[in-house]
Length: 89
Image 1 (tube, rainbow, N blue to C red):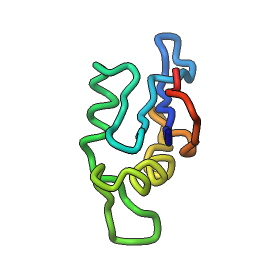
Image 2: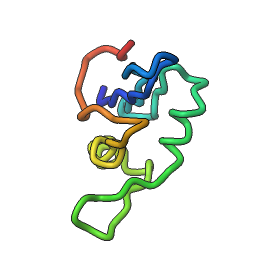
Image 3: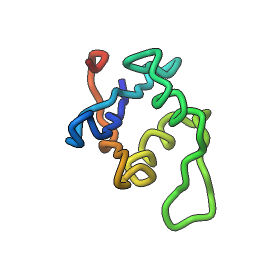
Image 4: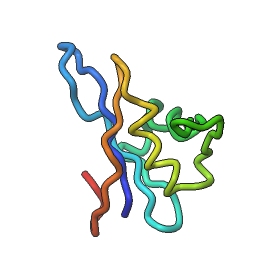
C-alpha cells in the first residue's frame, strides 16, 4: 500500500499525525475513515511543483507523491509517500 501521513497541530499546538491516506491498488483508504480533514485533502486538486498542472485524486500514485509538496504549511503537513505491506495505523 502506498500511503501518506497527514500532520496537523494538536490541542497543545504540537505537531501530531491527524491520519493517513493510502492507496491499496483499488481504492483510497482513509484512517480514520470519517475524518473530514482527510476527505477534504482527497477532494482537492494538488499542484505539481514547477508546472501549471494539477493532479486529481483519480491519479493515485502521482496524487500521493505530490501531497508532500502541497501540504507543507504552518497548520498542516504531509509526509513523503511511503510503501508498506500492511495498512498503516
